[in-house]
Image 1 (cartoon, rainbow, N blue to C red):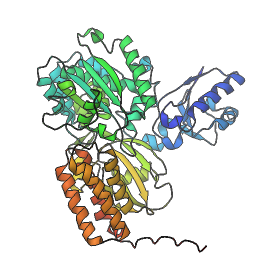
Image 2: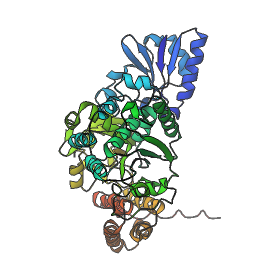
Image 3: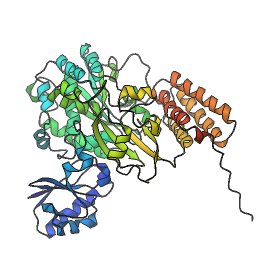
Length: 520
């Protein structure tokens, strides 16, 4: 029997992966070929999706992007034995885009059947958990701290400190909460892992529960991710049956129950305290801090909160040791990050690399430049609240501290590329409008400031009292940064000010004249 892999990842499904899988199954029956189709996760080379792989004696051979109309020709070309075809890409692991990566968190994604626990274990799955249940909880915390792992959700806060805070507290109930409300523009790493390797997240959260003394956990997933939600729910049930979740895990005496909660589409619920409110069944409003969630979190109890990428890094840290993970990266930014290439990019997709890689390398080496073929003018890094980088800043290494020096942030690792046709005044307006739409409305600087920001930028674009309104916009940004309750309003000025400072000419263009009505 020949095994053929067709991704079940949402990005692949959006370009016809289900239809390709069905066509391969139909053609195999027609030609009396013994074929087993495995629906794997995505390798992250989204520009090649649907990427079909065939298991051969020499390893997996890739073909892509494949459409249903290509399937008959693939069989004629003897693709089941790795035959030549116009979509032939050679050995998957040798494709430069994939080969140049350093995959730790995404080591299994695209390789295994996401819902096969046997497949997961065969590729190192649950090694970290089995090691963790034989350790003292404080030793788990120490190992995570030694790894240098920092929050991959954007803030970059040391994970070990959060875990130790919860570990040290006495409480009748503790929780673990995963922030999977991935709403940043140009990001899809969380979704890819939840769909392509859900057991990895489950394992990481279970290790966190043991370390902190928690017995219940919640994964808060945005409603726009139905495939991820379904994959997680199935994986949780499978893990329970295999006794890697639930009561007395693997006879260790530890118990941990895990639940999926669907968000309602509010960007603000990506903020940790707003997420907690939503999980509790309340409106997603930001909480005042202190107290911090590690002390009084979900239902007022000590709670470990991390995002998907943070929890997913934990199994390999425990399995191979904190020093192994720490050997990747630069400065205080240790390990790897899943960078996501989007926007005006020729080869969009996911690239897992150690910290220290530059924005220019990611765009040129992996992304292949712009899709339009025009020069890059700006790159927004870190989501809709991240700075717009000028081309002069593209060589700054991806490092939390180095990005702070240029008034930017690495964030969740999303890169949105713009060519030289972009109007940066309009992009600044978009940032303010985004905040106005997505603000929870609890604090005045964010709720009102963003509305006034849109109005002021409209006046600047229209050429109305530009000098005064530019000064007003800067003052407004300072107020929002210093006075907002959370990062929603506090970071909105970052893209606005980066556009003002990096692309001043766009704010001084002559206003477009309305087109004169044709004479009747």
